[in-house]
Length: 183
Image (cartoon, rainbow, N blue to C red):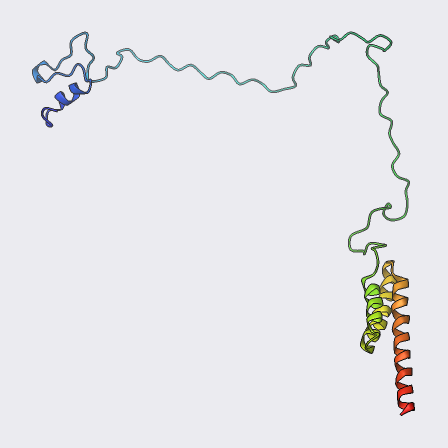
């Protein structure tokens, strides 16, 4: 770079053409481009209006075409199928159809009642102490009420829990009576 203050020389080094370092000779010649943009002397033509958008309506229906595939021997060319028959709905019945449970109601036949299972287990554990047998009797009675209201399974287990609990309490009372009578 020769002189940082001389912008014309810098421009020439990096490909500038048509720039003269002599201010008196600043007019470009006919073959050289001007450093200022030249504007056309005639006014620009008016812009063309935008194209008209297509109208959206019902598209034309295409003409039916012939079947390009030949008919198989022994089969009709274009079978006509009957219209869909209307199938009757389910027979009218009271309430909801089978398999549906209305919101807010417990499901019928919801498996085995948990308190019935707990009643039988607590009564069998009550062999060593009477507390398990008493808990088994109480849970068995509550389970019978739930089974009756909800339609669940487990009535036999609830009854077994009650009877096993009662049996252990009766045996425990007899054992205590015999111990006190013998002493």
